[in-house]
Amino acid sequence: MEPRMNLAKLAPEAYQHMLGLEQFLERSPLPKTIKELVKLRVSQVNGCAYCVDMHSHDLKHAGETDERLFAVVAWREAPYFTEQERAALALAEEATRLGPEGVSDEIWHQAAKHFDEPALAALVVAIATINAWNRYGVTLRLVAGSHRKAA
Image (cartoon, rainbow, N blue to C red):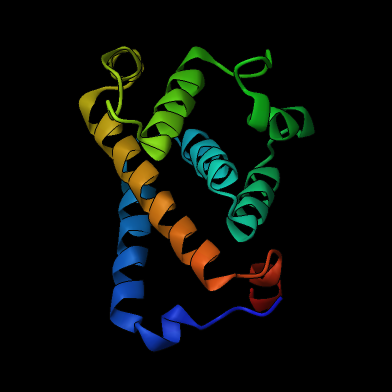
């Protein structure tokens, strides 16, 4: 499968703004591991092979264990995640799937219990940003693994 287009080349200003969100997240108080777990889980939910591949490798490179990486897809049943990570993953899933009620108060309060407001704000930005990247990846049919060839 070939990618449909190169967004960075054809819409460089938009692409740079997306990278600006990533730069914000790098400076934010959101723990890096949580940010990457959320990116991986949202990418799984959205079926973005490019992003699943990228964030799996990013987590592995950062020292994440195989057990945790393999279990992200079933994080509710797996014993490998902290309560803070579980709260972030629950918020990420509900904000990604957005049912008729949006994000429930229960899920929001659970996340707010584990993150102070600046970190919670960054978590919301991380969830929204990876959802946008996933929309690009799926729509443009980005090829899993191609980010490693370009790097």
